[in-house]
Image 1 (cartoon, rainbow, N blue to C red):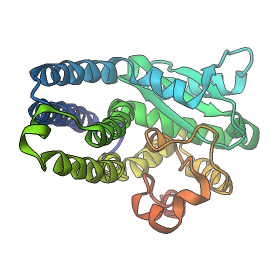
Image 2 (cartoon, rainbow, N blue to C red; image 1 turned 30 degrees about the vertical axis):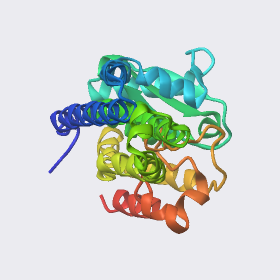
Image 3 (tube, rainbow, N blue to C red; image 1 turned 45 degrees about the vertical axis):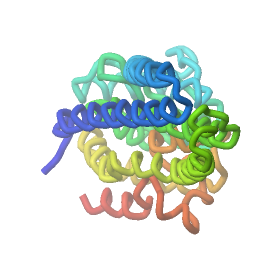
Length: 297
């Protein structure tokens, strides 16, 4: 059965597959634009762009995720309980002490990020520190440290950048399709209309594609992190109680967005992220199932 650390090689492999997929997609789009506009510079630019974005997603995606969330560094003096809980659990898990950040948001939530255990960070909201007792806080931090140990953070954080740029590229594709004007458009007549339609279709499908990529990293990783976190604290009820409190908040987080939603321990969009069509594309398993699994351990 999968436990702490057993998913490391699998997540590393998935990360390289995802980055390769992004590389191929960007080059393919670059080739399409270079053909339509009869300009090979576009293709060369796409190759360079895909290389740069893969580099950025690997080395800087954690900083991008933290900045997107509005997180600030947490000092030991200001957040003593948070710091000592994380320090103690990191020692128990055999992990280096991660950097700690706090998000000024009243909605209780948390996430882990970073490219490896030596460069990991955990961010929690002010609401989480306000509403959870120490035992519940230990459960949440143990869950996030389990993501660090399992190397979930590398895969999840890379997804933040690549999924975000899929949406950006689709928007660029749509705008270029509408404005058109390529030499091949003028020479081949209806080709511009076809390209415009493809741009519209791509723009409509890109958010769905991005969400599918997020789901491809598997909702099961949340169950695994829950179980692994409970093993660290030896007290499943702590995390179960924390999840109950977190799930009671229906309001979305201030900086909630689709690119980073899968990072958090709970859906940052609140109640609207679990209703209607949104339920089909939830990046987290239902909280009720997670709580039941913990209490049945």
